[in-house]
Amino acid sequence: MIHRTLTEHLKYLATKFPVVALTGPRQSGKTTLVESLFSQKDYVSLEDPDMREFATTDPRGFLNQFKDGVVIDEVQHVPGLFSYIQTRVDKSKIPGEFILTGSQNFLLLEKISQSLAGRTAIVHLLPLSTHELFEAHYKFDDPFVLLQKGFYPRIYDQNIPAIDWYKSYINTYIERDVRQIKNISDLSKFQLFIKLCAGRIGQLLNISSLATDCGINHTTARSWLSILEASFIIFFLKTHHKNFNKRLVKQPKLYFYDTGIASYLLGIHNPEDLIIHFMKGPLFENYVVTELVKQSFNRGREHNLNFWRDNHGHEVDVIMTSGQKLIPLEVKASSTLSQEQFKALVYWNHLINDGKGYLVYAGDTSQQRSVAAVLSWKDIHKITS
Image (cartoon, rainbow, N blue to C red; front, side, top):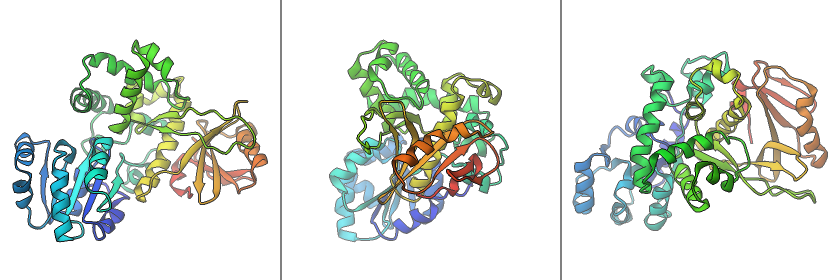
């Protein structure tokens, strides 16, 4: 088992809260993690039709089986269970009595906010980070090999070719998860929609353009984006509000939680394809942003990331907020550096003197420049905010 950075924080939360909920995409390692950390507890998956029926028709009897607490996997399948869990933990007041997992974020959080607010610690587990892979002795000399392969644990545990695994993952996701969230009649059009999203990585979200290209209306496009966000396929980076008396763009930027999924959807099936692909730069940017999101989630925090762009085209790829401090970060897919690549950071530093930022690139050498700290893609985990 690859050690997960979230482990210690998850164990700590189980000593403070009666319910701990772990969310994240399917196959990100949630079940493996909670089963190993809480092996003394019973385990039940509500993906099992018999267990799901039992929990639905007799929730009190279902919970009474577990005298010493329980790990309940994919708990969002039986939303009526949450009220009974509330009654139980309010009486017992035992820390870590219930460990819940779910792969449909909005559905799970909605039920927690309705029944278990104040009783539940919520954390997110994304696919593996680069640092976790390196710590487990999976070594990569080329970042684009890693980007194309992606970060899902089973690809590494079972040594499955990425193209085969992602084909199965996408088909299963569309056939099962999408139908559970919303009954979409034309699944082939939804699959086209996901591919169109992959082609817009790192771009300002234009829902009207996305809808037109897919042949659907604006309302449907917005609904489908919510489905992809709820099931941890995509996320959005919002623009930072700091305007310096300038007009700012308001649309968020779109990213995927895993570059392997995005690469597969773009028809990139090997690293050589990625090196010459027109999406090489956006995918590398996606990689860096997602690594930063993983760092925040692995500390048990929501991410503190935005981007900044004014209407004259000046842009900083990422703005990290640390208290009152704003830390700029630029991403370059090149393995060599030039002075031109620091242009956005120089502009930002003229606007706000709030300390140096970072430039992350695809090369191997980290160094300190006068404008910013230059970090190799291998050293993203050293970024602090």
